[in-house]
Length: 219
Image (cartoon, rainbow, N blue to C red; front, side, top):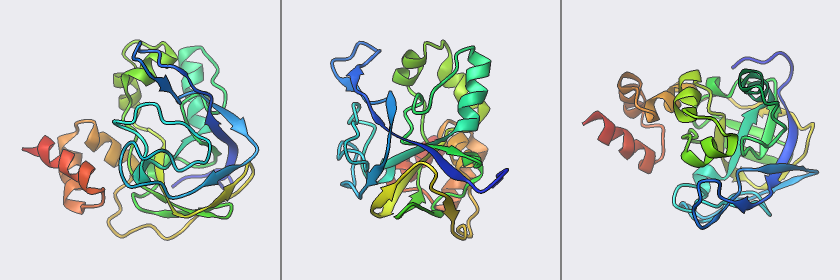
């Protein structure tokens, strides 16, 4: 984990739903707008059980929502990187994140590491997998490949203890699990790197659904 200063929340964001840019007959919650406070809670266990942020919206209920994707965090530093590369400055929440953070590299946090934010206790859970909606929203051809190659997907977080999170709250990381598998490694594994998929699979640190996906990749 690297940080130029104490990691903190820069912006707390909730969806401003609009029609899905892929043309599917549903809304998308990928565009998020800053709010003064997030109330986070433990949603149901499965995709389609909704987000873990009060008032937020999940459009793609087949692949999003549920306890392992309760809250999504992305670094302001990464928004700046992509904004410069794509020639399109990105505001907080543009990548669909509930928490825009400062001073933390999410690719270096360890899977299942816990973090205190505000009055809530969260836990690093699973990687984001870039999709067509993400690409269409940004208007970037080849976006899935480009985003994957860079290697920092942000982080989904599960809620261990509900609470409230506000801009300015510090991120206090607890001792990482002994397996040492980072979010960056889990992301690369999920996106097809078989060497890392073997490493992540053997660590057995991901939820069953994601663990089973790695098993199929390795067959």
